[in-house]
Amino acid sequence: MYHSHYYAGLTSVDDGHRHEYHGQTTLAPSGVPHTHYILGYTSYDDGHTHYYMIQTTVDYPVPGGHIHDILGVTRISEQHYHSMQSRTTVTY
Image 1 (cartoon, rainbow, N blue to C red):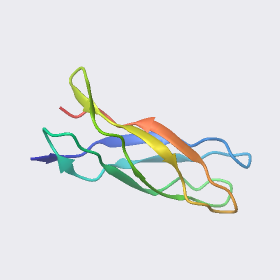
Image 2: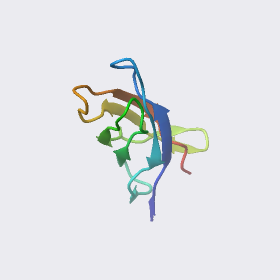
Image 3: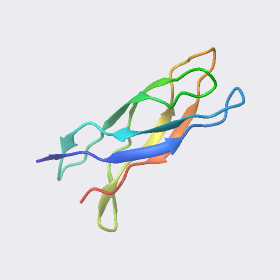
Image 4: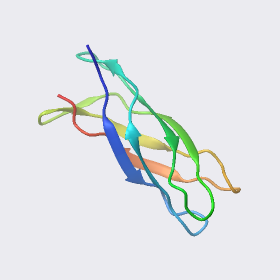
């Protein structure tokens, strides 16, 4: 069986602005240690977006299931990038 998670967050403030991001992770097998990927584009702010593709941390248990940390950076756009740090939703 496979599963995915939802995620959402705000990037770091760089070059005087930040972006929102949200989506659903790639699928991964249930019941074994695993990671997911998140990929997409940030919100359109300050005249541009940023592409991101980040591998999550390995799953770890929380009450009701497990989650993953998201730690990474966007691709460069308009000569800067943003840090991304959040967690996925719980999957049972």
